[in-house]
Amino acid sequence: MMEADESEVVTHETAPVWAVFADLMSGLLGAFVLILLGVLVVQMDLVANLKMEVEKRRIEEQRRMALEKALAIPLASGRITLNDGRIGISGSVLFAVNSDQLRPEGRLLLQSLVHPLRVYLGERNEMLMVSGFTDDKPIGESNRRFTDNLELSAQRALTVARGLIEEGMPSSQVFAAAFGAEQPVASNANPTGRALNRRVEMAPVPRTPNASSPAAAAARDRP
Image (cartoon, rainbow, N blue to C red; front, side, top):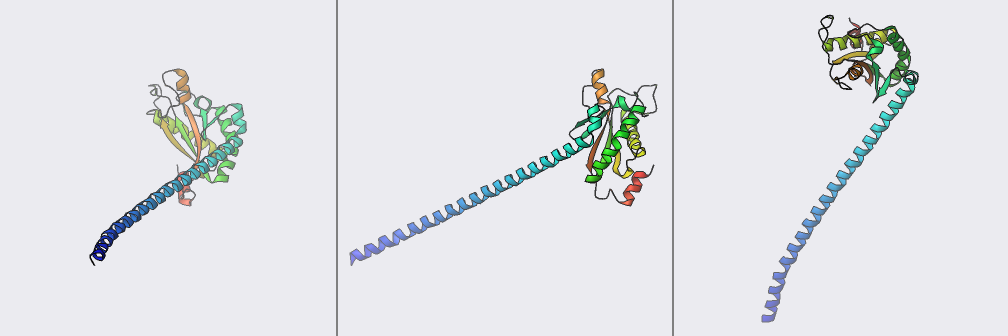
């Protein structure tokens, strides 16, 4: 009788130990599953982001190649440059120093750009941003038509935009922006660098959702 009682005591003492061990294992298994799921989610996000980046680069490369093809002739002549989708034109080709009046050779260059740019923009439903830049030398006292370099760059950008429109570019496809002496591409410490900074850039940009509306077009065409 005593032996039976002792057996029951051992059984009762052992059962809770196994129950605690089972609960511990269940908790560890649950934690492992959660960690595994977290790792899988992170990996899936990484793969998705990588695919998006690859697709973005593929589209950008296609756009660059299409733009190069459209502008093959002026690019080959060296009259323009193409860098990261931005078409660069030296200010000396378009304007005299401190002037916003197009040179004859500048007008001819714009004529050669209108048709390929119209086709390129039309196929992609994009617009052309014309940006004006200057060096950092202040406007001379002898030329008070412009308050500062920002105004000069604005007038030059407008002149180029209007020149493109006069040569056949739809006014709904082009707009102007001014940067003055900001965003130089070379040092302003020497004449060579300043000449590089006096430039006009043109870049295709996505059309805003309401850009093609009649109201937006009227606002752009209003003097």
